[in-house]
Structure formats: C-alpha cells, structure tokens
Amino acid sequence: MQSASSAKTPGQHFRQALAIETPLQVIGAINANHALLAKRAGFRALYLSGGGVAAGSLGLPDLGINTLDDVLTDVRRIT
Image 1: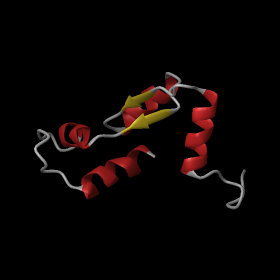
Image 2 (image 1 turned 45 degrees about the vertical axis):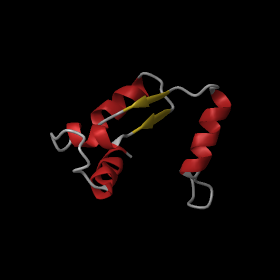
Image 3 (image 1 turned 135 degrees about the vertical axis):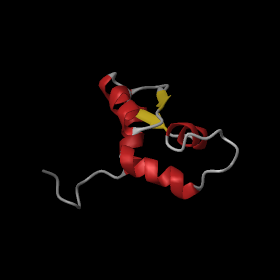
C-alpha cells in the first residue's frame, strides 16, 4: 500500500499515461459502468462531457440545463 506522501497525483497519472502511449487515446464515458468498460478495454484516460451528463444521468438534452455540480457528481461516481 502506498503512503499518502508517495501516492501519485491525477496529474502524475496523466503524464505517465502520455509517456506510455503517444498519442494517448482518450474515450468518452457517461457513467461509472462505461468507465469500467473503458478500463477493461485498456484505455488509460477518459473524458466526461456536460452533454454526456445531461443525457446519461439527467435524461435531458444538452441545452445548458445541467450545472457544474451535476458534472462533478458524475466525476465522483466514476473516480
């Protein structure tokens, strides 16, 4: 188990992924299940869009209805 002082930051994980795979392939995920499938398929990075949150979590079109808090809720679920 890593101690808190030796744990990698998200930025360090990202830079390591870039060093391993250039160009880094990034896939979109709209929920935790999709993120797990992407991980299983070998992706080292993913992105979450506001449109994906609107459609996947709120069942709404991407019309600027969802907020940053809605996106952060899904980020917490995925990570």
